[in-house]
Length: 294
Image (cartoon, rainbow, N blue to C red; front, top):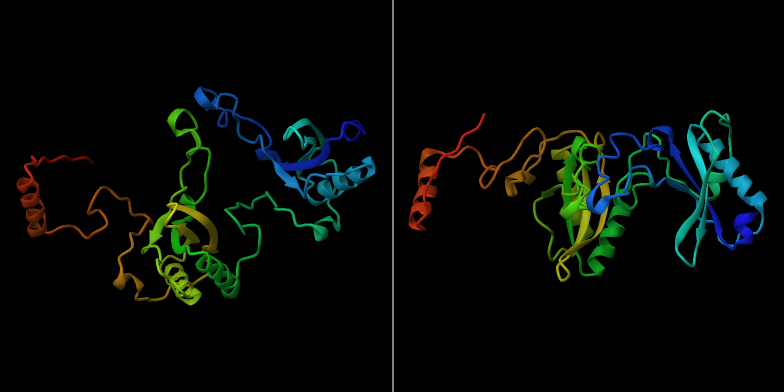
């Protein structure tokens, strides 16, 4: 009632117990430009903020539905100031174990992403896996807007951000995180005019690396940025079969295959190939030198 009287919008957020608290792993960045930042500040929103809500009973019903759907999660009620664009109230309204699970209808009205043992990616990751037809329609949209489709892939262990990968949230690397960049499959498909071309590449990539996630991105060659990105293959969805794609264009294998500098994606160089590189070095007035490491 206090929230409504002050013309604020009630909204609910929920989170599993293991991602509800700050711990010593999550607080290593309390310095520099990220002072005050901590993990688990942001929880998953239940439906949408209740703009225009005029009755506390509506909020209580949503609290009941949310806690019944996710009895193992903490639920907190926040109040959003739509003018200042900030949260001004936040408190816990449900703790795990207080309510047993039972059937509800709340999620039939509006889908809510499940944060429990359910990692997510970019756009569409909250939906069931996309069919070829659904992917094709997205590609048609990409092509109509003059963008270039391109595919990227990565093994599961390099696909998500974890607490090890986020220790650099400070100074010049604020906002950087590991695993943002995946290995590119071939090249961006500049000039692509058919979604079927893209589907063939998705199939070839996923069959070459069935244990990897594959995502489709759209590249704007004018602005030099990616403007679309979504998952088109998840590990385990396709069996390994022989293909010809990699004979047409070599793709670096990111699975158990560490890389170095130039040429590391090629087979080991022969003495003759090394000699030609040394000749190039000498011709350009450079000094060859050797380095080694275990």
